[in-house]
Image (cartoon, rainbow, N blue to C red; front, side, top):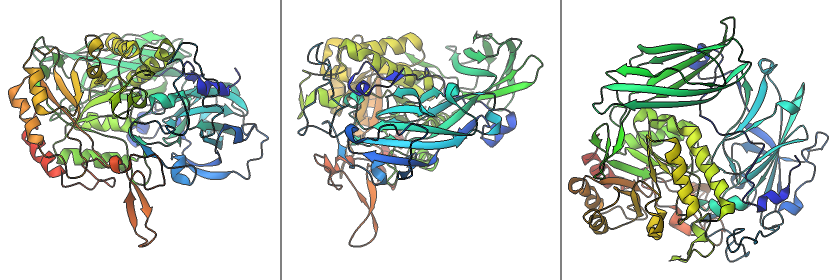
Length: 631
């Protein structure tokens, strides 16, 4: 298939040549590699790439992906990293409005009528910047005779991919992993990878989150050698009986490769490293081992984040080890009863949560493991037991850290279309997307599927969130139905039905509102509520705020069906710059980068500054969250 620039204009095209989403397991050659946390099946492509920047599609370099293209005049850029933080393009912070409002007239395709497709909407746009990346690599010797895939952990907003001049694929969904098969076009010796990244596509209509609007390859990139027998997907389903005594682990495994005569040994170890179950199975494309029954099961919770360890060892027909796959998981029982009480392990669930953007004052949304571990430390110090991944899937290590530290997660799908239904504060959904528009359904369902498939095995996730501030409609309902069809161990969340009650019986397992007064919550919970109540955002932490938190916390004592919620938000979005007068590093917010229109210091509403220094407001959070920091 030949690539088409018109895909940028069409919400029906969002993945071409992209492999299906799957679990986030890592495959190693040996158990020693597991101990070293380094797989020889993996080759990082992070680092220096060659780069060319264009102001719009018409100015991009045609043919840059070809092997004989001379790129000596290209600049250099760091991957991962945002284009705008490396000297190209415009740094821009905006909240609900789309970045082009007041400058360029745009409406989402098919939103005003089914024949409105808007040719050239982004493919011919004057404001759609383009980053063209080149990376050359030579395959490691131990990749020989293997199929080879490439994984991009995050690229904003739309990317085209070539290898050695051959088109490989196209992807949107900035915050979900994109994986492609490079095998057909690999060659001996040096290979040329080319990536073309567009700041805008129709994806921009449903990625209208309150944040700095960046572009580029902002998360890690790697090559993966596929073992002779490859574990494609792992789905663990741990359950616990009502008495919390016996755990039952069922699982489904998907394999591909040369399967004849091969087998897999599956071992489960307890948190104390005792083997509690094992089985050897013959490998087929789809394998369902026997259920593992574990007595006196150690439960996973905030205070006791007990993790069991699964190890799958894959053998060839001669019993030689081909690959090993470890995975940590936990047993816990999340239950909502007929009285709208939600319990975890038979204890009322209380969420002392925060909303968290991924953020660094030097890297923007390109964050490090050090940033993540610091956040966990701050959570633990201040009795924060829950996090909403506002408003998109986060980096994989964050989910592992939440598993290990007992942090309850609301895993949010990458969807926000705020500017399509709210105009200057008014609810006005005349061209809302995704709404009930058929042409927008597949793209949002694909985002829901990517969120679920990648993170389905993490015990920390208690809620699947359908997205943020995208109004309501058939397509949101289809997302809710999808999550319920694949996972009965978690609850679904979505706040937007509060804007239009027509869909409240088919969307979200919880009543969720933004910034409701404690009295409004009381009124809901005392008048025959249909659902338990959860604050997806409350205690907006801008300026000298977070006073009155105690009024919300007191609701725990009054209502069994009150779940608490997530403070907006955890961390300021601000960037270090060198002050021209003092020469010192200082933090700058929206509007400080000649970005217009902007929502200015609205980017600074965290309980920690962008450099993770705690604000005075954290004292109140620590006090009240500490009073209710239990199971």
